[in-house]
Length: 199
Image 1 (tube, helix red, strand yellow):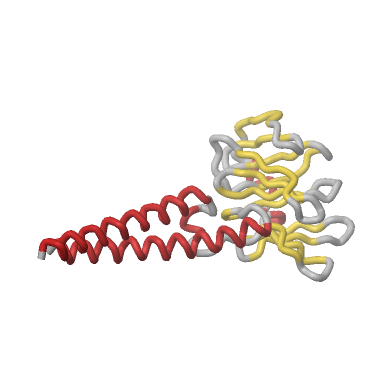
Image 2 (cartoon, rainbow, N blue to C red):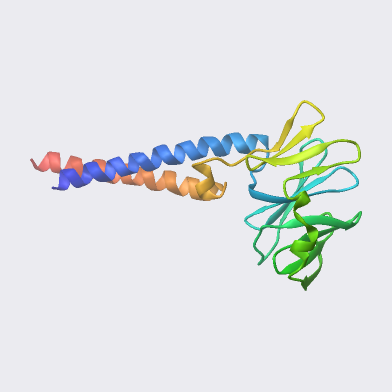
């Protein structure tokens, strides 16, 4: 009985290691291209060409025109999806389903007010794409941020795919799954080894 338990624990641990390694390999690839964004929603384009995108878990990301991350900040205590627009060249407005927030371009909160209609007023036209006066066009495709025009298309923020999406694109849960898998394998081997010695 103990041997079977040891084999089952080792097998589950091996599954955890493989699952965590798969998600870890995706995370490494995503991080090399830029920070991952989970469930992006809402785009806004600053006059200087910086692209802002709302994403889970309650964050705003800002990308320079060359695709490099300029800044990101949490939207504390609020849940997406978000809709974004500029009130002035240096003021980003973020509408949630219940609130209207205003930030500077570095993420400093300048104001927040209850406004259940802001999300609807902002409209869905910038939920998935935004076009600059220069003709540059940015889109959320397959849950990633891509500059689609001019050619060639360029990935600014890669999508988070399964199984990494189960961890929200975060490193800590991936490491925990890998660690737990390794520990389970060691315990399973220990259970089967003790049984073999006792036999």
